[in-house]
Length: 501
Image (cartoon, rainbow, N blue to C red):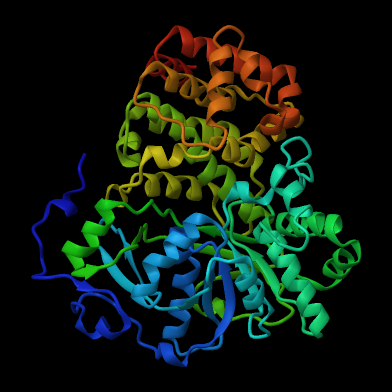
């Protein structure tokens, strides 16, 4: 169903190009920074200025500055990839400003976020120099789940990853963000400066521990003595982050132009829900984010599991089933009783029992909230976005839940069906359907999925993705049975049969 908000006629006579000097010219309904951006100074360097960072972390900092607090903690953007260069080119003419639109069904709200005051040239040397600046006390990251060079077989740092092998042989010329971090920490140590805190904001279980393992693993290959110093002196706090943030395309750019009168090359749309839970481990200090709703706790792990298994696992559950049924928008999929029923049954019966209790939090209430968030028609989130990068997301959001249930001797019928739906989706891309795999391992996934038409175990023959789970006879049997049902019957029939059991 089309978004009714996008069919309204233009409510403004002309769009205003977003820049610092035009903020006063924006329509009255648009919230603009109430603080003096010229008075802000850098405290955080963030690598990976994508939509999620701007909707989430940058928005929290913006709200903090609106309170007149912590003006020495502004954000400096950074990156090392080609898409970072493209983002910098879009934001530079806008003085690093971003329009963030919260797509609340009760009414859209647009805010111009001003918490980022610079964006370092996309160059390793420039990035090292920026991290060396003593004003930078936190280096934060959103480099995606696949950006930490993890092994599915061990769950830890993978020293054999091609990018790591290249990094070790780069002769002091870092090529990855973690190589840059190590070089910057080495420089600060040589200058007698305290190290910055490394704060991961990616969707990973114990993301701080993961970031630490990657930094230390690479550092030990480059300079073992430096690795020991990092281990003793650098903090890597864990955090849980949450805000559904669709990709930006022509639809979103047009929305910001026509409804809010802003010409923004890279606006962000998101749901009106945000959550940020962090371990309070910042030796060089931190901004007072608790004043704008960030929760600081001793143990983030239960919150992480809740979110990763229920919300991210839920996204995985509906992604491939919905794609195979031809749904494009997530809210349309949730209106399909088979999809909503599959999500609920799988979550309640198999995922929820693996999530530990959290004092003061209703897990069943969280399950209901997630379903409501997925059903937000105004958000316009898409099934293709949820299907992205399955080879990195499945090992983070689904396979650990399978492993936990196997270890507890519990059934995995629904989870095995979810993995079978992914395999069936990968094979469908070969058949001229509307399915298109957007994954760094797309070619191999298709090859394995096609081979699985003769023997379902062929899809599981990817140890770097499935790890030890593929060695479980119970999982292999349940997966094989589910995939064979999908190959013999329609997806709709298989889902209906699962719900009827």
